[in-house]
Length: 130
Image (cartoon, rainbow, N blue to C red; front, side, top):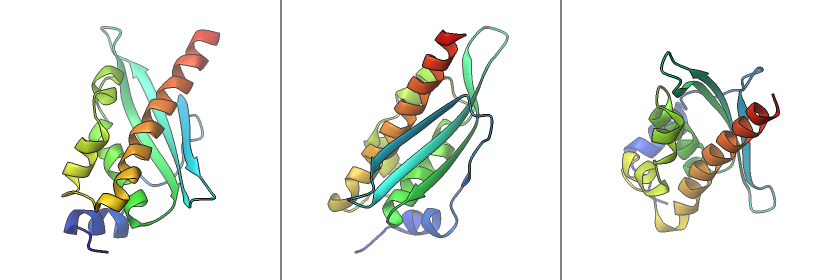
């Protein structure tokens, strides 16, 4: 499989790998049977204007090079953004930032976008319970 230099860099040197104990929201997507499972942890804080900002993000991913690279890239793309801005990032944006992905690995970028959406959903659910 031919991966771009960016994919290989994020696979070999993943950014923001790990977990966050006091995460505002956690999103887990994938299927262990097919081999790719992603878990994103978010810390979200409101700024002075009441905008919800992603202050920190970490990931744990079990999967192929593309799964790890897309997880790493989504963390870089969304940190510092509002939830609204972050959710506008689509899987094709993640793939483009990585110099594209082989067609057979595009599902990894979909998983990364879905993990973010799931973590935001979890955050909103927890916030509504308070």
